[in-house]
Amino acid sequence: MPRTPTPTRRHRETKHIGDPPRRTMPVGHVLLAMVVALIVGALLNAPGIRKTALGQDVGVKRDVATFFADPLDDLSTFLLLDRPRAALQWTIGRSGDDDVDLTLPSPTLVDGGAPEAPPKRAFSPEQQVRMYIAGDSLAVTPGESLINLGLPTEVIGLLGPVDGHVATGLARPEVFNWPAYLAEVIPPLDADAVVLTIGSNDDQTLTGEGGVGPLGSPEWDTEYRRRVGGLMDSVTANGKTTLFWIGIPPMRNTERYETRYRHINDIVKSEAEKRPGKVVWVDTAAVLSPFGGGYADYLENPDGSVVQVRTGDGIHFTRAGGDRIAEEVLAAMRSTFDLESWRTAPSSTSTTGSTSTTVPTAGAKKKAGK
Image 1 (cartoon, rainbow, N blue to C red):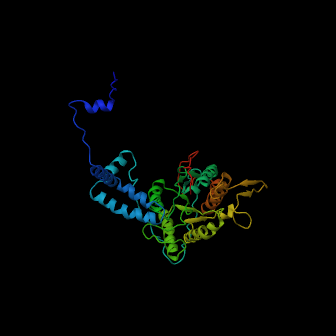
Image 2 (cartoon, one colour):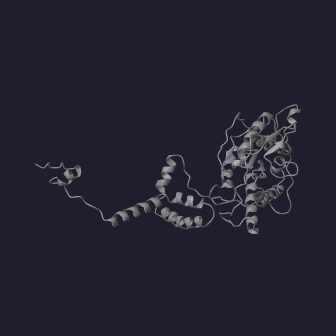
Image 3 (spheres, rainbow, N blue to C red):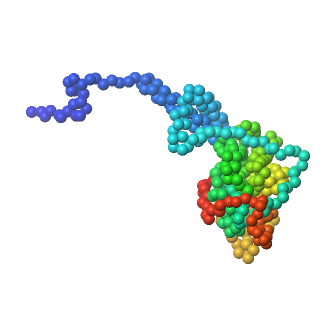
């Protein structure tokens, strides 16, 4: 007698009497539902999509992305569909993540010659220099060295760790707006000295309000000079803060340095010279180049020993290289401020300095990039 095969699970499920028939959805309805879901999702996340589009490298891809992202963001705002995302960001403490500030200050320095340098301000252990250090990734190692070398002087106090923001500068305010950021950070700190390192990411087309290109064109020079001067005047506007701007160092890619970064350095240096006593240019080439100039991975110490001053990428610094830059910054501070008279004065308390709280150690934001 033939054996009847045992029905499979599928057969049992489909052959039960009374089971309702399966309902299928037309392919067109499925596609429509997917499209609607994508549109709603895009509208809910439109602010983030716009910021991501603006943050792409300048070029056709960025132009196409912003072409679609800008009206999408406008529609999301009009329909109030940006509110749930903003509420969620506020809940997790990330309000403002999608903000894009393209406003960059213009110089306030009046033409007609550089003003006279203000008198030196005297500081002491009781009324220390309130120092704030910030910049791109090139600020990190020299900033740590400056902390290590500055605190033992007893007259320089620290307002926090190195405030490093990788791959930032003045060229792309939609990625990170340094003038706006410093205008928010510096006033509460009441800083006497701001040590800033930016520029190594600015060898590109400028974006934002007034943005022009390409690099090296007269229009680019004019706009970049405006941004540099505007930042300098914004930081020093309170009449108290002195800005120490660290120049871009020579790099292993000599052609790139000579055709791009030297030009940026020249602009920054010339703007600093218009503001004596308020902005101080710190030349890194002078302390990182061998005799006669140029790039070097290793340099000779005064005792004749040789030390590595640059990392393997030919851009960043070893601790020894950071120490050399920090020593140059300290020398600039000694020329700008009176840091010594307290040693011989009857009272070590200065009436023109300011008080700060020193921090025994500081950890910088170590990230890859510039």
